[in-house]
Length: 399
Image 1 (cartoon, helix red, strand yellow):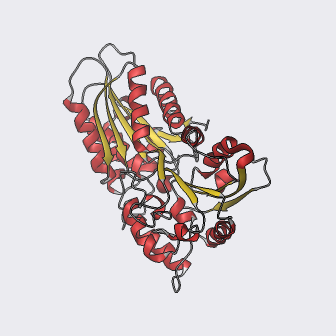
Image 2: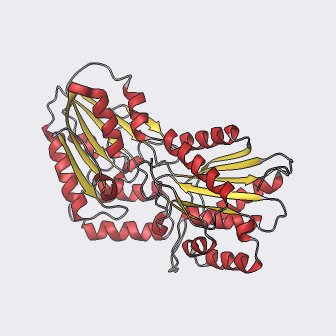
Image 3: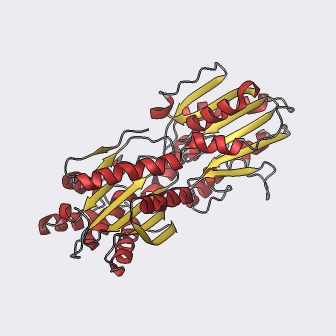
């Protein structure tokens, strides 16, 4: 399990709560276990190749290779460097490439060429499993004719700065690159048995949008697409954690796609509306964004959402806590995994004013560090978007 690191300012109650909650969510969305569950239904014993790309590709391949046993033929994996450097596959038939994200680099293109060569070499009577997870669009990069890597990087950077959703970003990528929009499916057209397993980082789990739909060449696609886990998996595990912890989930918002500050205010508003004396929680899952155009602050959607919710709740007299988490462990440029904050941590008016100012400048990493609210995990090896929870503690709850 990944290390979960807190600042010294986090109270012991929230520290224990956050560690247990994060562990529960990451276990529920573990890519290795998810792929193992779904491959139990895989029919026929034939030589099987793996083409994997994305933040969870190492774990997904590990599970698939275990399941396939002697039927495993060969694997090509494109993964983030922070994860691929620690990969330990016993088989010499596994080739792993370190790639960059969110802006593609030349080594992403070189790795993609190797994956294409593998795809073209697969015998037509073998099987291929394409394992896709979040971050794959940047890693699987092959520019179209007369499109440069620099153009792809600049377009991606501009859209990320303006808070574009993953769906919007991937739609543009499909116009610039050859493997998006069914391009990989065309490379594998000679293989009779191709199947796709996806760990979804897209709200709605649309296979044509996840990783810009490299295997989605038709409707319906010729290759079966199976979602092994997604943001709903994370939200369901969060709700189950609340029940186990004696916290009543009174409101759940799924599929949130909007500005992170607005989402945070909305999270707080729903909590304020519930006045029961027992401990209750409001849950949220989705892909909030931050438009940082014209700002030089350092933050990320989950930090901004958490600070926004905390500022709204700081006006209330009841005891509250807010926790946010990006499941891949990297909240945009902030490099944090999320944050946890309490009423006591934001009780001083001067801190509340500093938090409001940080929101205005999208500089939420600085204020979270100052308050001691930042959570760090490093890359988690999964990626199913973001979750947040706001808790209103009951009157008899020990602070």
